[in-house]
Length: 48
Image 1 (cartoon, one colour):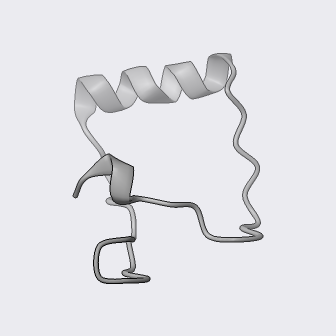
Image 2 (tube, one colour):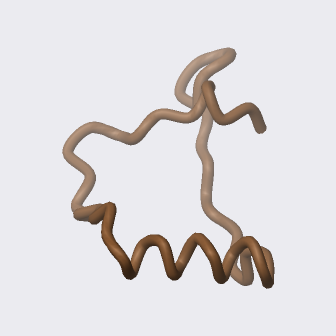
């Protein structure tokens, strides 16, 4: 999956904070990997 092809869906219900907790989450993912994979759905031939 190419990151540039990923787009947030319109009016998603999740609020994303770019704060210390997000940095801790990113560090945990770097150390341990993703324990639960994300869900990606196609919306066009080359976009997801």
